[in-house]
Image (tube, rainbow, N blue to C red; front, side):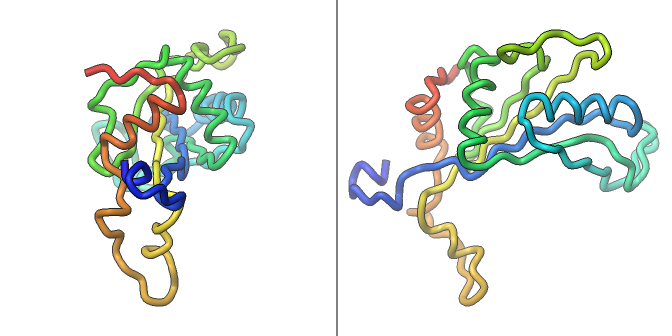
Length: 176
């Protein structure tokens, strides 16, 4: 929206990162199978996530390995998103977007991806996918070492801009 008015290339939206997460709830064999699934889909080595607090009802202790995740950036993120939108039939509900312009959705089974077949040794795993969008310039304000500042509103990404970005670049259909 802002880039249309000014023509400034630094206001163009880009994908900052795409995060893929599989939560299994316990360490052991299911955790290694989940990491194998993520590695098959992304060709990146996943990181094991640990629980932050103890929940007695679910038998989870603080520091217990409960899931795996991987973060993709640049070309790997675009390539993975094209496959993920194919698995979702290019449809995302409007409630999957937050006010900051990020999008979140889930895929119930890894076999929905192109070329993936069911493997009885692995089983069925679903995953959560988070897409973080940013502008080409301006986000350095909050990360630089000297004179850190907050992000002004004119640089922030809105929900409408992120919806439009995903529709134009990936052919996604937003369901109301």
